[in-house]
Figure 1 (cartoon, rainbow, N blue to C red):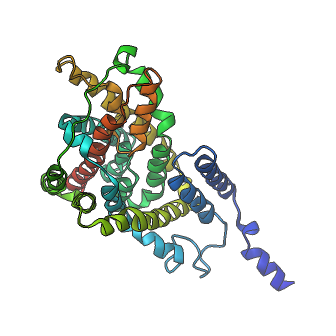
Figure 2 (tube, rainbow, N blue to C red):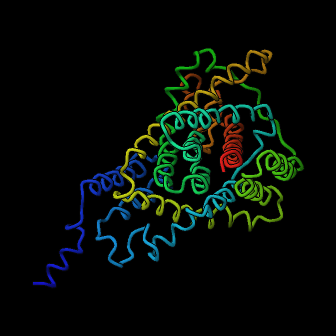
Figure 3 (cartoon, rainbow, N blue to C red):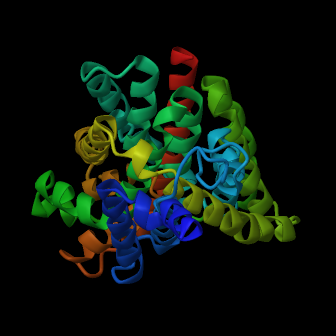
Length: 378
């Protein structure tokens, strides 16, 4: 009987709390959204399962080394890549090897939309500071507005590792909910006539431009924001592998094997970091609320700035303001949302390629913003 009671004492049934049950339900919802609704399944399925893994109740502090925060546990070793900012640059390598910057090179002024959308980062930084977070915590929270999960993880690993779980989950959740959050804001801030604007076709970009861009782009952005070098260096390196035409094997490895492996490890461990005993706090709730506001402000900033740009552009060169919403760095989901909303009003108006310009500019912009915050706050 003593053995039996010891078994019960160590089981999940004896250590479960309402917090564990709540987080298990959250994990189930994430998996449901990924599988049934197809909302970013490559992110939500690993994260959702990770939440379940991280919230299987057990007796802490008895040397079993099970929890993600217990030194020596397997999950803790896997989580090391998150805490030390190792996984995000590898994700950026894969993104670079997958990304075609032709739309941005064809119409360079679209980079301004990517920059405008980063207003969400700095607005949320101010809001978090007002709510009592320290400047470093506020900076880590603010980056959620860029809708860039890897950048959010990278910055929070430097500025506020104790808030990593909440920030990462919030960033990836809002990335997955792009098709839900953005359309109402886009429609609210634009008129029907603006949504019907047709833009000039994207011009053909020479191979020499595509090869030179990652080299010159890295030099320019890294000089502006040296703190973003780990992210931008890998992003532009991956793109050079893709565009050079002589390293296709390396590019394939970066955009397939590497990015898939890291996505699995990152999603699973980020999900597991939501252990109820450390995750369910007032700060986590505030971070989720601030993240939602940040993402909405970023979307609105891109759309409004596109409207402002149109005041100075001649007829025939005007920008469809819908593409401003793609200035957040949720690649390529924001661009797809722009295409979807645009075709609701004109089925023959193809905005996808145009939207990819500010979309990839947003990736660069969020990384630059993270580097600036690191330089100022650390």
